Image (cartoon, rainbow, N blue to C red; front, top):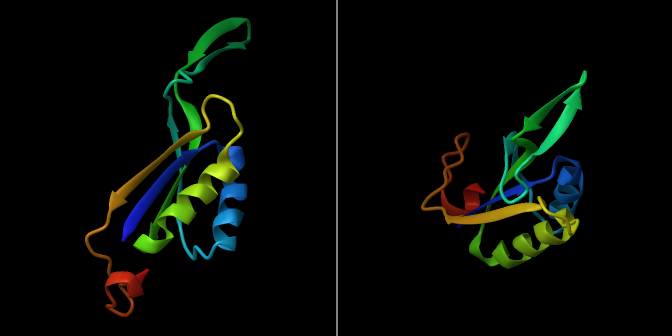
Length: 112
């Protein structure tokens, strides 16, 4: 099992969610986060004063999947989140050792 964590632009969230639903991903966790990478933030003008916005708003999507869905999941996220501009985001894949469903006590792939 894998945990796929994707950091994407907030306005691409609905597209990613819909695309993942089409390939059979049943559940996900979404968190509003802030951060920066190569994009580095930007300066804004507010009431005549210029200030730097270091951390940009992003959406963090976490999806637990069986190993056989990994490639399709990553491709789906890339295809639906990509704008071709700096700041499109990142995808991280980590190994899940075990998963339990609290309601039934199921574990492993059946708990996903």
